Length: 259
Length: 356
Image (cartoon, rainbow over all chains, first blue to last red):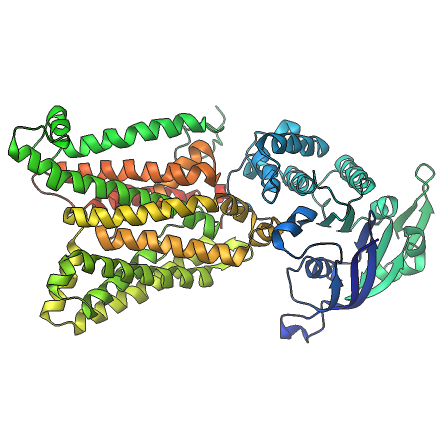
């Protein structure tokens, strides 16, 4: 079942100073239910713009269809959770309260919400931070709190068309927590949640993604399974750097090394 | 002790975890009638609590005491409580709307806008007799509401982007709006004839000392409306603190909610300006203290800021009436004297709230 269908997407450049080169130019793809769909590419390739077009945060041309998801904002919020790259929360909520905000669109009751928040905190390994003030946390702790929030938003929804959209969710995390979060993402995908995310780390993308989309200069360079996309030629072009690819013996996934 | 001790935040003595919300609610609910009693009892002539209660119940034998209580001090105390509650809840709402703990209606030009709106109404519509009657009060309130609405929309457009509101931009926008509104008021005064000028200055001088039952009635009715509607936006305001886009992804109709909140804040500030003049800093100080005690959850912050505002303004007005008795200071002077240093201290420590 197709959850998101993107056809000929163009995100125009809002500032004419840049010569008007679109931020995303002519990208088309389908994301199927339960897939972990990862967008990769160098800085400024248009990855975040693509996600923002999908979440309807910026204007775009072309078509983005989410046939199974209601367009009513309240219904949509029960099925689609979004975490952008930067969050700006300056008020001293506790970690628990931040995650609890995820239940805003739901009507599952205070008691059930409380249990779900605890589950989400546990999933992100931040149960011990529950009563801490969000604004006092480190960058990585804040990121895990926000991740727990979007996971919690999709809990307890009786439907198979849930969609999780994440923009670089691992940037502030240590290696252990990067893998911890990716395993959590795989586990929600196994429950039928579709995940579209931007990642910088190709090796993590190679290990956890079902499908990769490589963007270069606003355009689609390659798309397919990790083994189809991650080869020396494509990666060399993508990052403008000679690369070597070896196979990991333990995970049997490609590992990229810049030379 | 190590040498690099961190500078103390204002009110750093308060606990770092939230107080039990119900205890604070109970304490404030008890404090409001006590402060009312205190405000009625104290003044140039001190009336013992027993006589105050007797007067309120209509059983006082001393006619003068009964008159002072029922016609002068009770309406004034009630107006102070209502206006304080309005300023408290509107301050908390403004801070949520701007996603900025330093946003206060008096600092961002809403109060000035409301004053200009009221001055325009007094200049154009009313004669002295209408102006003192209840119809005139409604008109002035309407003018203040419209002026306040234009000011909030102006500041919001100038100061807020997708990342929230920068303190500097917001305060500068507030200065600009205040200057425009002040200019407009001066212009009206310049062209006003003697009669209109007198009405305008009469209104400008009037603080809580102009309290009467007509004002209490208007304030009471509009406070009831605002208190009936605003708490419905608690969840939306909570989501708003995460950011506009985040609130939208949590199912909040952002534009509609923003517009409703702007109207409600302008109404609350308009009422308070029309009936009690400019009273600065209450909307800044009260929500801030409440937030330090129970956190930023609007479900509790809004009602508790209202209660706290009522208590604070009752105490400030009692102080204003008694400290230099028989001279009565304007209550706005007292709140400014205590509020301005508080604001400066918040400004100095704004980095601790992640604000620039």
